[in-house]
Image (cartoon, rainbow, N blue to C red; front, side, top):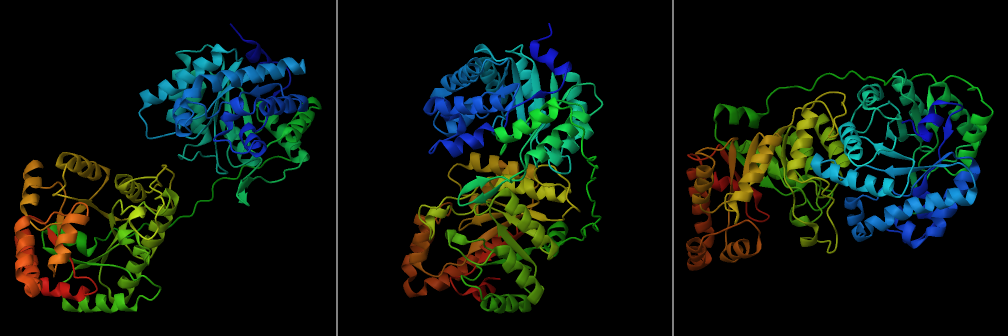
Length: 601
């Protein structure tokens, strides 16, 4: 049976939708944990905003429920209010319709699940639960909006259909190139959505009006009505507030005319749009306005870059041919002068016994020169290959990719992906790490860049050629968990590994036995050159993951002033023993004496 919404969608002029609820509510109601909380804390504000859009001419108003699934509410400690928030969202929208006296349709708004890495079955439960609550309170249609993952949107549609019979409008967010954040083009999205029996599909949120029109142009021709509800434009931050451009009503009016020409049957706005913009859309629809000028499609500018060199790194070649690798670990300087670090690098390079330098990334969560930048300086200065440590602790996924691409352009190829010491152990108590991904996720980022895409699957100008390493701790308390993560790193794209510093190779032997006799990727064993009993005790008792057997600590204690000789002998024994078990070693030299690593090797 055709619903009232579907009839109005296909007959007469386009329907006018409302604008952006969330941004306006958060500006109007201080202290909201999320816009949806206003349904309970400030219902009068929600009602007033609905009425403002209705009076501006909206035929369709969306419930204030975009982020009201169980997972998103749990993040704001509002999970217990799930039912109340969703049901009140519908109640307030219906009340606004009654107060206005107009024939307005109420759309139940449902956003993405909130974690693209989650299992699809769990996501389906979230969508179905919210859709059931919204339809149960009497919405006229359901709008699944602001999706960038096409697979998630398709799964959401299927999940909603298990509990609801209302018409569904499906909307994705596109950038100015007509692609989603995940790299899905508008035409491909339309081809996937067209057979699903939707009332309409199209674009919302995104990079603004022009981006929405380009997406509509690519989505036209399937026979399914289109919808366009874009942001005013690109957001910025001013004084701690999110602000949007001041698009003129004339600009929105012309947008509505273009959208109708491209087949849009539902036209409205998203973030930054107010009743003033909706009134302009209403006026354009009522006057059957003609577009002022055609929106010329602007194909993505392709920059053809030469492919990155696939030449093996020195480290990669040595590991492939079975040559024993020796690296020395360095800490970058705590200031802006790299000369002391470079002098050590030159000395190690001149020895002919060191094949690489692995460079720490803010060890012990204390700010130092960035490991990638320090590595670039070393390679330029003395030609010795580096293995910079990279951690997701200090920057976002976007920032990580930017740093890695810049380092690649400067010739860095070997990377050690590590989680990094937590910020609270360092110089910034109370600080929090970014950690949008862990070391496994960082390994996946590197694999994506090597495949020619970013982490979301969007093409980059040319593939990178990183040689990716990861950390593993054979002396971990829970070896099962450690090996599970190690194998996940290998699956994600790791090509070599560096162990935690070991003082007893029996831990490595045990790990290799658990792996079936050999490691799936080459291993470099960490050898810490310890020169005092006090350091041995601190490492064992205070540094996570390091185990120094009782007998070794006792030998340091007994040696007294001769502890340095004990440490040197032990380090040399470990290097010799590693030749039968691993592909190489990396030596951690004594504090502020990096050249002493040469005594070990």
